[in-house]
Amino acid sequence: MYDRIRPSWIVRLALWQGWGITLRVVLLILLAEVLQGVLAPRIAIAGAVPNFPLVALACIAMRTNPTLAAWAGFLSGLIEASLQNHLIGSFIVSRVLACYATAFLPMTLNPQRRLSAVLALLILTALAQGLLYLFAPSVLGGEFVETNLRALVYNIGMVLLAFGICRRWLPLSLLEDDRRYGTFNL
Image (cartoon, rainbow, N blue to C red):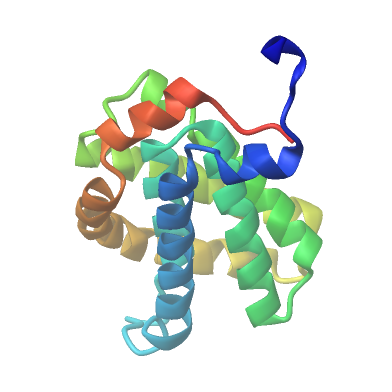
């Protein structure tokens, strides 16, 4: 008798088990975007400005599943493009695809190691900025590459610090529950 009862999508959304990890990821993205707007211009060294959202996305991609990493990339791309007055679609697509691809790295790398986070940052930055240049090319191609390489060197130092914070906020024991329940489908 109860096999035929299927709750509506609102009930399934309210009872979904992944709210804890999703809220933590949203808070990390919002914190990274605030730091990018407030702190990043003040700590620039020789024209190299760190990119806190890419650092946060690399850490999130190493600690979560590909679906949640893609959603984090969507949120980060939407906020970052809105704050910088850029083309929103190209930022969103580049961040989503880069985060989704980078989230498969823990299958081959140990997600507990800091050097794995550095490799994830290198791959994520190359994919995200390369796709951004592909979808929204600028006239200043050489300057775009030079600026991103400077920021990449700065971001490597930042990811070593940020990975410790992400290990505390996104422990793998919490993520095992997320992997067990899978993704939420409306």
